[in-house]
Structure formats: C-alpha cells, structure tokens
Image 1 (cartoon, rainbow, N blue to C red):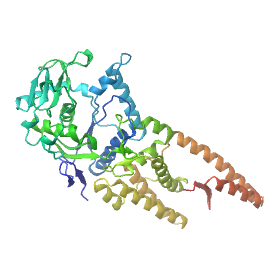
Image 2 (cartoon, rainbow, N blue to C red; image 1 turned 90 degrees about the vertical axis):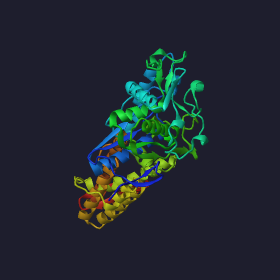
Image 3 (cartoon, helix red, strand yellow; image 1 turned 60 degrees about the horizontal axis):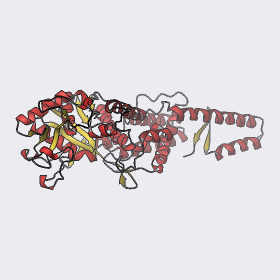
Image 4 (tube, rainbow, N blue to C red; image 1 turned 135 degrees about the vertical axis):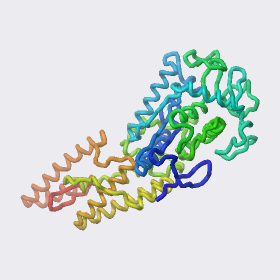
Length: 460
C-alpha cells in the first residue's frame, strides 16, 4: 500500500515517492540550544522519530539529519560571564540528547552543529550574491525577497502581506522583509562568536544554517524536510527561497508536526508556560511519556494535562499486561507480522491513533483467546502486537528503569501473598485464603488461577 504524507507546500496529502527507494533522505530542524528542552520539543522530535521508523520498516534505509543550532542570538543572550555561549550551547545540547534518549528517540544518522558548517554557509551566500538574489550592506548580507518571484510559496503568502523580518538590524536592508544571511559583528558580542568572511567579520543568520547543512549532508535534493508547525514562517519559507534561488531542488515534501499547548495556549519559553522535559521524566515513566506524546496524530494540537499521562499509562498498561500473560511461561514474541490494518493506518499520513486502535483491538481479542484457552491464537496476536509496538519504538519485554524495579518489588510481595493463600487452601483454612484474596483485590490486583499456577495482574 502506498504511503501518503501531508505536504505543507502542496496543502494536501501526496503519495510519497522517494528520490531513491534504497535510501530515503530526511532533514529535520533540530533545537536551538539556548536552554533545556520542554515537552513540546520532545513531541516534535518524537513525531519524526516515528516517521523515520516507519519509513525504515517500509524501505529499509533512511538517512536522517537533525541539526543543532549552537550559534544564534538567543544563545548569545543566555550566555554569561560564568558560562560562555559555546559552553552553554554544549551543555544544553546534552540535555536535549538525554531527553530524546530517555523516550527512545533514535540518534540521527548525522547531527551537525551549525558552527561546524560555516564555510558551507559562506559558499551558499556567495552563490546567492552571484545569482543576484542577495546583497551585502553595512557589514551584513541580506536575501532580496523581491528578487525571487515565488517567495511565499510554502505558506502561500504574498510579500506585501508579510511582517518585516526581525532577525537582524535593518540598517542596510532594501526592503524590511529581506532577511539576514550574514550578520556583521557588533561591539557587544563576544569575539569567539565571530568568523571572517568576504563581507566582513560576523556570523551566519539562522535561516542559511539549515539550507547549508541540508545541502552538505543530503545533497541539492532530498525527500523530506520536517519541523514544527511554528517553523513554517519565516524559517522554512526562507530556507526554501534561498535554496531554490541557489539552484537547489531542495525538499520534495514538507512535513510539519502540530504544537503542544497548555490550556489551549502554545507551549513556549517566551510565554513562560512550558514544562521542562526533565521534570516530566522525573515524575513519569519515560515509556508512558513516549506513548502520551505519540498517541495523538502528529499534525494535531496536543493539549497537555495530568490526565494525558494517566490515560497513556492505563493504555500502555493494558498492552503490557496482555504481553506478560503470554510471556510469563517463556513464550517468545519473535516472528510476528504487522497487521494489514495497522500498516494501512500508518501509510495514511502516519495515522498512529488509528494504528494504536488496531493494537488495542488485538489485545482485547488476545485476552479473550487466553480466557477461552486458545493459546495458539493468543500467541499469534501477541506477536503481532509486539511487532507493531516495536515499529513505534516500544520494547514491551524490556526493563523500564525505576518503574521496572518497582514492579519487581510489587511482584515479590504479591507472590508471597499468593504462596500464603495457597498454603491456607492446602490446609483447608478457607477463611484465611479468602482474606488474603480480598486484601489483594483491595489493592487493585486480580488473581488468575490456571493449570500452571496462580498469576496476577493490575485491574485497569
């Protein structure tokens, strides 16, 4: 079945046809590392992690590039005399990496820092000047938006309706909407943030960074450019214009994930309504956080409340309980195949909510099969569930840190009570046996007496 993706530029679902089916290529805008990640950053990275995993499942190989913006106005502003900008950027980069790793986001094929590609940025700027689409003025270099007739094609805006570009001092601009490709050095900026160039000492503008890094690591044409919905304008619009004006085909598809909101308002560092990823991960199992952030469609707005994680924990718990019922006797989950309905949902613009509904339906049918002693059917369903969840980035039989240790401690206590109940029943002390069972039930635990012993699960 054909994969379809929503292309922001086309404003419609398009059949995905890679330039090279043996190597799908993706570039995703990574973090600007001026401070630590909030949960919206994790949701954005997770959306493209799931897309990457599905494309790997279908095509086999994906070259995935996610950059790190380590030189930027915000990074310089947040630096201090105690911590220089490059040290701050590196520390924050590690915080992002830790949060991504915690929720199982795969590391990119390449993860370039902007500071490592300044020569390539300067090369691209010179091409734009030579092509008549950029000009140097007062130590800066600007992209001439009116020189490019299709400027605004990504977000379908006319130039005259756009707000002035606020990314640089307008001292040398011909048009207030022209954006900076190169920023001349200023007296109040550190000398360590300055590079020499044909247009004078300075540093690159934000937009040219991604165009140059995508070109360097993926070539002049690649399959998918991804990022958050808030990056469509001006960042991605400017990337598209400058890359196309330089003669590059650039991205075939533009894919954007929806935003995270709190009480209906965009989660943002500038608004101060963000929840740091580290705080959430300190309180919640990382696998539950992953489930909570991907359970909604990637293009939808996700409003975060405490119940978001509670519902995810309950849903994931139902899947885990079913898997535990299958594997507690050593049954292997390997060899499962993904259900056609799951694949159809994923192929339809990465329909994770619909795909998860297929998983939960299989869990229900699997539990029914176990209750009816149809072990063969239950095992087949469990293997399919495991294969589907694995492609979504979940290892259902893997340990989960402190949560796993807590489960182990609980299991030890419940097994002790199960043994005491078995002894009471052997001694025909029915009253004691009933009291133990009632105590276990009061804790929300269900006992299941089977031919191979008594097993327990949490009542969801």
